[in-house]
Length: 178
Length: 42
Image (tube, rainbow over all chains, first blue to last red; front, side, top):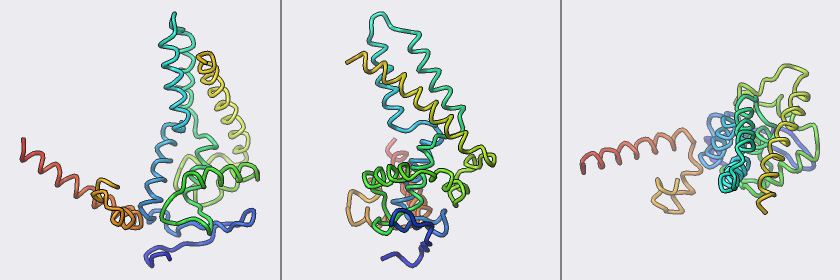
């Protein structure tokens, strides 16, 4: 039962689920709101926590190698620098959307990480969701979600390719360790 | 949230349902109190 102070409205329907969001995105419950801030932090860093964990592990592997491969170290550092200059990655949009939009089975007060990982996978599998999210109230929360009209698809393709390249570099370092 | 709730599960649940802005106001108040206590001890 939702408290009277909150107003929830239907956002969209997808694959048999009805998704809702809070009418006022700036008046949301603490449980869900703190998760939104965590995602926002990832936005600011242009790295997911998973990426940073991989980066730190790879950095340690290189430091512990003999001789220390400075060129590889410089490359992964350059990758991190490059990320800071990019606008955003598709994963960030999916994550933020998963906090903002909840289905009829979820609690509006809290955020279930395991359930939402599956929700994101389903959205990705459906296709066309990124473009859709850019037309929702999500764009009001993050000013740099406003990409030039018609260029969103192209931008996301490039961002995904860059993300994959960076991840490949990190995984290559880590695979040599094992 | 657990720190502010004194690890009381009922309080944690209540906090998770209150508006985020109200939660931050409470947190700010609590931090101000703790800072005052620390200042008194030192």
